[in-house]
Image (cartoon, rainbow, N blue to C red; front, side, top):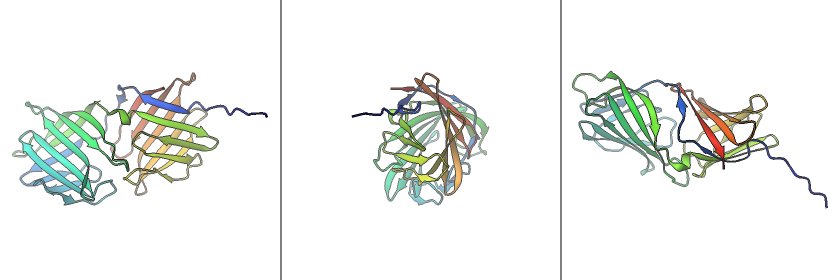
Length: 249
């Protein structure tokens, strides 16, 4: 019997990202916590709620339907997102004693498996909030990302004929045609639609949409020897691009 071997593409395999990355600045996040009101006009979706720790309905394309904001002390807040009464995200913000920097400990489980993805953001203050407001108020720029969880650093890719597929450990993935046909990401509670196309001979571009709006463009570019892959992620909502190197496992 004659067995025909099908050559793997340079994209095929399990890839793991290095913990370091380069990032161009995106638009600052703007928070206002004053009196009993908390607002984040730059958040997606925007937040405008009472800061009383209670779940409050929110509209917009996201994996959660309620948000609450708890004021822990004069330098700390905890935001909690829920879907159908179940927690799917949280964000603890702690401002430094001098007020010039802050740390956000972020967690999210917007996947059908309920796996938690986590990351820590280091921020610097760009502008102060109004007089009398809580210390989290003002404009903040992300300057560093640390402690990204393992399940957000690994992905399995495959290019077979005119179909490109992606899968991660949290159970989210897709198999999309290279003609740009929009395809839902399975396992994603945010209802993300994805389309892919070739960019030259050695790069594939993924476009993510929420509610018909482009939110992110990702490019996968393997090296000539097939041992590493450069991934760039351009945020179409807030600007800025993240780039990191993945190694074939």
